[in-house]
Image 1 (cartoon, one colour):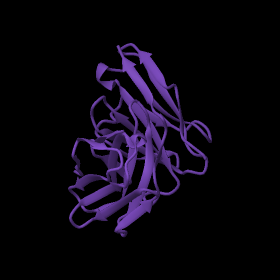
Image 2: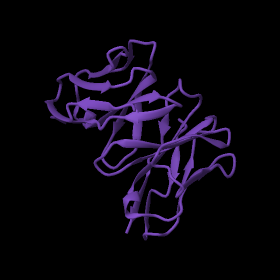
Image 3: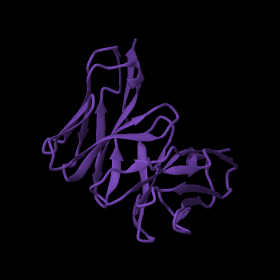
Image 4: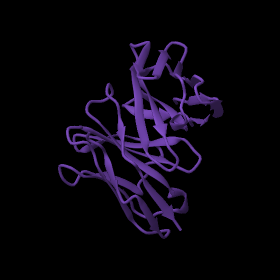
Length: 114
Length: 111
């Protein structure tokens, strides 16, 4: 069964460094998302992406964040200058058609900022 | 702003009992509602999706109901097993197809 994959599974970085989190959505899906979950808190929406552009972003998704679909399979989240409070589990999700179909989530990347 | 609440936050049941997990949301203008399972330190596994026009959805031992007008959904798990121990998350799709999540119901099934 097709699934969303994410790399790396765990990333440790120092404050102020740039990180890129990678995702491979399910191949026939057209809508892509990033969410994050800070330890012990709710899963929070960051951004949605369709047709090579951002369709919606939350207030969390400030100028430090960017997303890109550099080729036909990958979907990336870049954090330019990481802060301690960016430490969280980051989930990528995709769906075939929004908003009627399920969003399928990847296993997540645990980002630790020291 | 859409707020999703799940009650109870945690519960323990003996194996074989039925589980009832509740979810409420503040804005009834939703497209659909999804229930997920999350194991510790892991990703989210989609269990059921209920469209806003539906009243319930079933998959095996799982049954989810939706009352959109009152902003409520209930997930029933029949004849619980130790393998059902996990956190169950409720999420609604609203706005420009973003998901808003509850904090989850942490379930322990005691053998």
